[in-house]
Image (cartoon, rainbow, N blue to C red; front, side, top):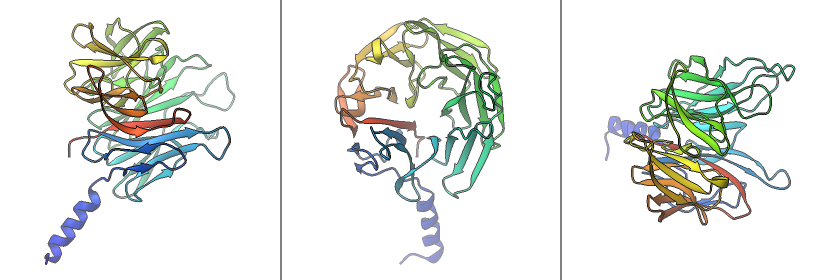
Length: 319
């Protein structure tokens, strides 16, 4: 029989241990988790889904306390230590964009108003913001900010420090922020983004003050899922490339030379590192783990070909 103090300590430890979603059907969709997610370097933290008719559409985020995917009003992402969920709240048209930070252990929520300018082309509204992304060290959240108008160009990024939750705007204009937008370097000291125009673009790296550090003349956009654009060692990086993002291209970070190109099943838009030797990619029947020779090692989520299902895989730290 456990001593009371030991039992309480064990209970507290278990309560603080994040729980990954179980194998089974995902609410509101025909998609299914088909592999055990615990113990992996990635987590399925959020998904959106659309059907021809409402109410068959929405967004859900994994809530470890409830052991369920719950409806949510915005884009969600979870920190690598699984302690915090950040939700970029849907445009409420009543004020500037806001990120809600939720402590997943205590349930405490804190709203952070982003220092984003008003949109001069839309009366009473602010510049568009999208794709919140955690730094690999979990100390900073990045939010993309679009320039006025409909062109996919950047005005800059907002960086929110954790745990102080103080935001600051960094002006980086005219980057081509297609799916995923700005992504982190492996050391969390810089960001990369697509530059140029579709079909004739490169990848630029900036420091966290907005200064250009280097440019790789490679194809595609920076990968945004799992461990992100750069492998754990930082020696290689990944882009979603070629027509309709039909391939995953791996490049050498030091030289910018091509390492490999893997043709993928067209199931837009999951591309990212799983570990040093594997990628997280679209596969024939959903999303899964693929080695650098293009062999599918494991399917994680099965998805019907006709489903409009868009998952968010975040990195997990070591536990």
